[in-house]
Length: 255
Ligand SMILES: NC(=O)c1ccc[n+]([C@@H]2O[C@H](COP(=O)([O-])OP(=O)(O)OC[C@H]3O[C@@H](n4cnc5c(N)ncnc54)[C@H](O)[C@@H]3O)[C@@H](O)[C@H]2O)c1
Image (tube, rainbow, N blue to C red; front, side, top):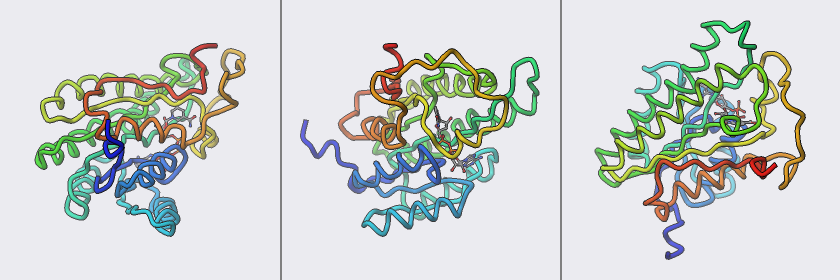
């Protein structure tokens, strides 16, 4: 496989939630691989800060305002990206809410809020960016960020969160099937615990769970570790890999 197949030179990558935490790791990795990255986030100041610091070191990062809970905002942002940068080759559905609420105290409002951003948002992003990819006719890569909690370590209060990430897994499988005829792959990265602003600020009861075992490969993952897995799925080299899941969890699965 030529090394060129791992380059993202000339590719446009759209990353939701690129203003914070794991999103910064993904944006940085894709920009270092040569992509022009567009951060789509509701936090405009944060997005501008990340873009400015990467552009100072010679990378190519732009921003677009996006509220994933609002369909009109999604349609507007995706259309603006196509006009300003061309159809994305890569879409990373990364932005997500992580608040907790115990199941027996659960509210419809929590379920709706969580699913609007973590489930319906990626669904609508896939529709909008998918249409642009198909119109361009060069294929593409979609990477969805779920959670290793769907496979292993759980804490109390994440019922609505797990429901929304389960929806994202179902969406990934179906979009891998429907978009394959357009040479668009759809894959999933499942992060283990990463110390991000969002994880630290998550509201709700304490994240109580089974006693934490020592992770074989280290105490905790960094945003760049998640970025590396996203990058692999995003490369031209990964053209025949679709509907796959990679956990990046510092070895939790072997404990
Ligand atoms: N941090 C972890 O331990 C962990 C573990 C597993 C999975 N994840 C997943 O990784 C992803 C990123 O998490 P993080 O910890 O970096 O979170 P974070 O809160 O630090 O960053 C999330 C970003 O998404 C943006 N965002 C939130 N709602 C939005 C909306 N409605 N429209 C547009 N942008 C919005 C925020 O402004 C922020 O920039 C999430 O999907 C999360 O569920 C995180």
